[in-house]
Image (cartoon, rainbow, N blue to C red; front, side, top):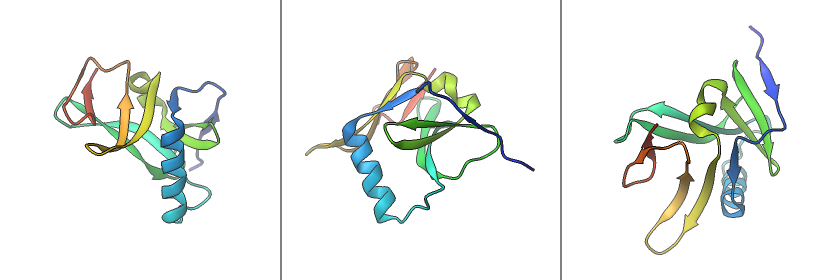
Length: 118
């Protein structure tokens, strides 16, 4: 079985400088292999219907690959409609620390900010 890879110049999501810095730090600390990219996606579940997927992974069949500000980003084609235009940020404040998702496609979000409905 051969892997299907599609690389495009269109950037479906954006990563803030804070998110890029934290992702590069995690990639280095966890010794993530060079052939892995940042997988961004959605899965069913969460208090609002969908929750986000964010982690380093290898390319799979049906994935699209993007270069977003030097970060290799991998997404399933099927997830694009839920993620188009989304911004991923990293917050490191006194009351909140972690990745945040600003998704213009979300009709409702939960209080924790990691789940949404479309």
